[in-house]
Length: 132
Image (cartoon, rainbow, N blue to C red; front, side):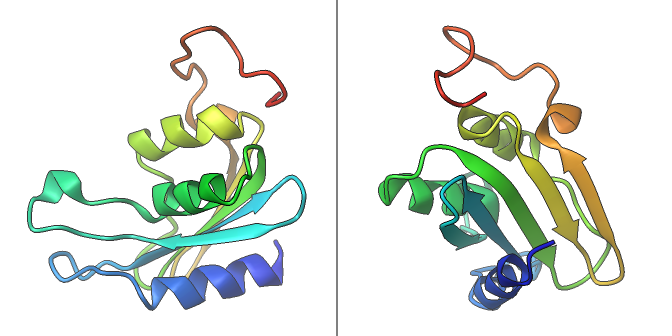
């Protein structure tokens, strides 16, 4: 699974801002060039403004110049392994349609391809060049 991915996801999960749900999430995103970018959920009193860990990781990666990703690892401190929400699936599809999605919960682990989770992502002009 990549011990470094899991380590980084757990590390950043501990810094999540989750005062409303108490549900901290960490994500580590591996770019095709091997760089790893981490993100945690950032809740807001206006719940619609909450940002998921996966999208924080994507934003951090894009800001660093990464545009194509190989794998994302999501970790939660309690409950079962969870799949990314619909918004995160769409954002991930923009940069990694062949992405492997790994989720580690308190007592289990699950794996999917992004295509399994989002078989028909929204695209303006077909597939992104270089992302498939």
